[in-house]
Image (cartoon, rainbow over all chains, first blue to last red; front, side, top):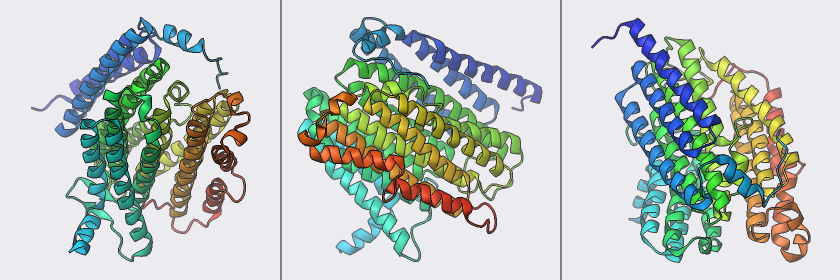
Amino acid sequence: MVIDPIVARLLLAVAVAMLMLGAVTAWTSTNFIKRVAGLLVASLGALCSAAALSAPASLLVVGIAVAFAQLVIGVALGVRLQEAYGGAEAAEFDAADDANEPAEPKA
Amino acid sequence: MIGAYLDLARLHAPLLTLLVPLCGAALAFLLPGRLAWGVGVVAAFATAFLGVDAVARALLEAAPLTGTIEGVLLYADGIAIFAAALVAVAMAFLMLGAGAFVRDFPAPIAGLAIALVLCAGAGWIGAVFARDLLGVFAAIEFAWLASVGVLALSSDRGALNGASRMFVAGGMSSALFLLGAALVHRGVGGTDLATLPSVHIDAPGLAAAGIGLVLLSVALKAGIAPLNFWIGAAYGRAGRLAVLVLGAIGASGALCVLVRLASFALPAPAIGEGVSITLATLGAVSVVIGSVQAVGARNVLRLAAYAGAAQAGVALLCAALGSPAGFAAALVQMFAMLVATLALLGGVTFGAGGAEKFDALDGLGRRAPLASAAITAAAISLMGAPLTIGFLGRWRLVEAESAPAGGGRRGR
């Protein structure tokens, strides 16, 4: 099936936008579960971008496998964080950890 | 008979350096703590032997093992052979010391921790031997997720916080790598690294953007400043075994992959100039920001992480030259970084009992003279003082920079 170049570019633009949106969510969100969701969106965006760029099927398959592995490990980490800290907010984790350690200046 | 088997093993050394730690990991996963550690030590030292033997042959023999190995899976070149040996030796030393840390883990998961360390080592070795970007991507993600696992297994809950930061950084990095690999495929017509220096590039802009994304992705995992936003939390809150895995295997492995990718991209006429500028900029920024961060650190483990970013920046500056002398200087710098990291982190985790605050090091010379000497030697080497391996790395950079051009950029 031949995709119209304009449609392909549109698909690529949407996929890259998805990747950026997911990455920004993962970067800025304070909730770990939202971060994992952001990563999932970013991975889907990267996969769609790769598909729009006619990447080989092997790259897409490996990308899907990696995204799935990340999702599983992310959920497992989320569960363990919930058990250890009683929440999923990064600010809570930092506050609990920083109680034992002074803050460092940011460079 | 034994000689024939040895020759066969040497012929397939790259594949064996991958398979031995993976088989060791599978076995260690099934065994209880101490036994798993024993298996880990044997597997790690066998891998190190194979790696060092390959380096010795590359240096001494007229026709070393280079070129495509095992069909289209692996590609051995000078940088890959040296880098794999570096990671394997680091893994062997780490595994030897890990015997002291097995008790840090609850009995049922000690074997899992040893298995994950071996998986991390095998992943980075696979990434430096991979022939195409697909193999590099798969191997890096395998190593990274194994490292996150080791960190998450630490008994301190702060390590979980560090693991979450590391996990998020790795996820963003993998998305960028995937997009970059697809762009390279579109621009070059394939993802084969070995043909990149000589292939005709149809769309240089796409290829350059793709390689740039791939390099940025690996730089994030190598902890190159300012992409090292995850490193302070991960190092500062990691358990004793995890911090050694991150510092000795993870940072070194990622830097080796970065330099090897650069060695394929720099000789490509259409994109080499852009890659060189990107690497030089990233290296210079990493030296400055890493050094400033290290000065502000109040925790020895974080100091090691930030100083490592500065050292990695020097290695990138060496690689950005794109000449054989530049890559040789980068290899020396990577070796210096690994030795200093092992000595510093090893001294703190063994000698100081994991006490990472500076004031906990007071009187360490009396309590643990060997650990104290290791930390001091590492610090002096990180400074680049004469008669240290760190000084040699800088010296080789100056030599490479001042060497006559002689035929332009040559990465291989």
